Image 1 (cartoon, helix red, strand yellow):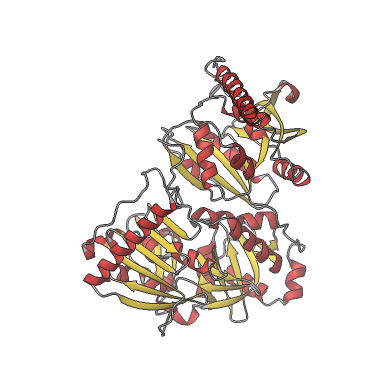
Image 2 (cartoon, rainbow, N blue to C red):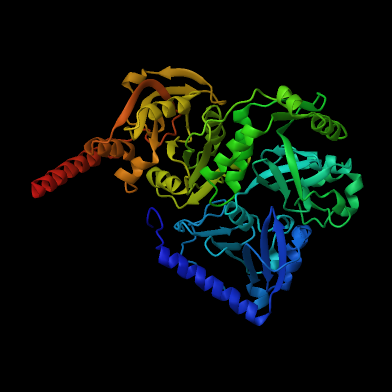
Length: 595
């Protein structure tokens, strides 16, 4: 299997046109029903050639319906079971999908493509014409979340063309101002939003809203909310609005039509907050750490929206520059939540600024992508991610690449305190896993962390500062320190000196993306030694790699390391030497031929 699937742009467009042809055939068999929506100021037309899809998807967005003919974008929605039109096969292998839906190889600057395993939906969008395509095989198989928050990916792409951004957040408030509530799943966004709804506040969303800047404003996308079954009992006034629950799924709260008057199509934003549970404390607000708040806002959004990247981080940075930032500390009394939010919204701009964290202009720095390859290392993943979160650098994204593990990594992924990008591939070795991470990465800066290694605090900040002061350097590298750690990942012993450690630790370095564009990627044919091979190639090509005399990587020795007990042959050291000699001869021959 190739290290990366390459799909020619002509073939990408051929696939789009073929899918568009399927939609046209479905619409010829059943004339489509048209609905026009106002989505954060963008007029989006939905053409349903499937009655079953219309029944499944429209209710959650029906409050956005408007009259008119002119549209900024049009989405064709169809299915195969109802229309009898079979979907054309994709030009991609089964392992070409990321966890958030990106299709490897679809890199056209104009075409967007995603396939979502959870709902088995294909999403395509032509940015030039504003034409979207949405297909599922059988609408009856759609999970509850697809019906409660439909077309999220297509709305994300469409709004991005018109200066707006989808954000994983809740929003409640009053006509004069609202509070944006951000954070990953399980932090209390839905509980907070519905507690406010029960007490008469306006509701724009509990999970996803659209945002605009200048000035900041949130727009409703969905007239639904989602709760765990045990949470639903805490909202007796909403009992009649609860939808049917399937198995252990969340309960969907249907707010239309009974709570239509409380659904705010748009709210000007007065503040932003991220919730945390604070048992034993009264509910209230505290100043927020701007870096933690940026992560709470950006990580989860970046992890869920295909093609989201550095533009989304820039949007969040601008948002945080304009809004007072808080931590919403949730006590045990549900009724105290809306009272605390009401009190916050009663404050004027000067009072909010005084109560919030000191104003901090978020530095517009390059997005940094952290790539963590994993093979049967789920027990280390939480500690590796924790060491990433100890870094102060922002903006950042975390990409975990499962290199064909035989163990199930999902429990370790789901236990992480932040949302990350998660991709899988067949087992092809650490070099291929790092290369797959490069394919997924959005950042201009790249860092690699083996799952069983750790970074000292502020490592990325220091390495990035060094790169910023040396624009001619393509990478900057520190030193690794061999350590022993306890079960909690705390260092119990240092083994040897960093000055005497292996000189080519990839995790001890920070790279510009341009380094891989110029030199090439890691040699996927090498199971070991690919790190030394890359740095040797860099030296042979006169690529500048700056050095810092600092410990920038903690290398844990635990008996299960891939290099444990390997001979020089197994570690490919002889191969590295031979490849270096061959490259030197080739360069010499090239110079001789041009002399």
